[in-house]
Image (tube, rainbow, N blue to C red):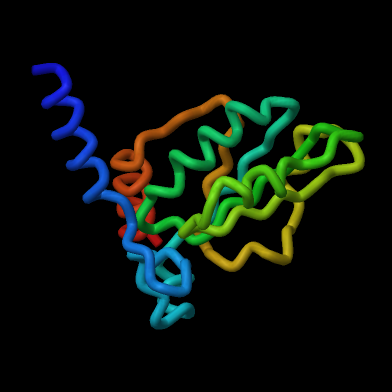
Length: 148
C-alpha cells in the first residue's frame, strides 16, 4: 500500500514539473511580452546577506514564486568571500533574475546604495533571515499599488 502511495505522489509531482522543449530549455510560465509593462507592474527585492549561503539560497528559491517580482538584488556583505553566483546559477533556470552585488566594506547601509540595476518604483528591503509568504508579498504589493 505504501509503495502505491509513493508511486501516485511521484506521478503527481512529475506532472507539476516544467515542460522541456527539444532544445533542452525550460519553458517559463512567466509572460515577458512587454518588458516595460512588466517593470511598471512589479517590484524589486533588495536583500542584504552576510555569511549565510545555505539560508540565502533557500530564500532566493522561495521568492522565485512571487508573481509581481521583477528582480532580486543581493547585497553580499561577506567581504573577502566570493558571492555564490555560480552556485545559484548551477541550480537551474530561474524565472526571476538574481544579481549579487559584492561589497568592499561590511556596512548596514550598503543596501541603500543607488544600484543602477534597480528599474522598478517599488523596492522591498529584506534581511537574509526573513521569510515572507508569497501570498503576503503579493498582498503587500497590491496595497502599495493602490497608494502609489
